[in-house]
Length: 74
Image 1: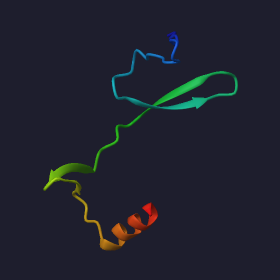
Image 2: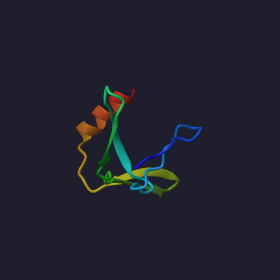
Image 3: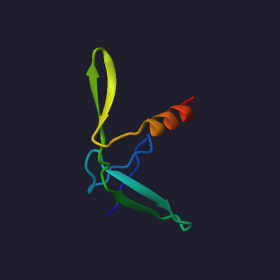
Image 4: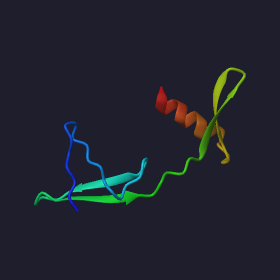
């Protein structure tokens, strides 16, 4: 199978579908290996409540974990 880059360095893979993710490995002899990655399953969904955007998850998040995440952001 042969594919060609366009002017923006994009390549269309005949076996790929929209949204597919690949790991790209460059080999020293000029070869490129694409490995299809499993789709990422979202564990968080976003909802609007009283004008605020909230993240909702099925997992229990402790106050300590929330505080640690906030400290990392600031």
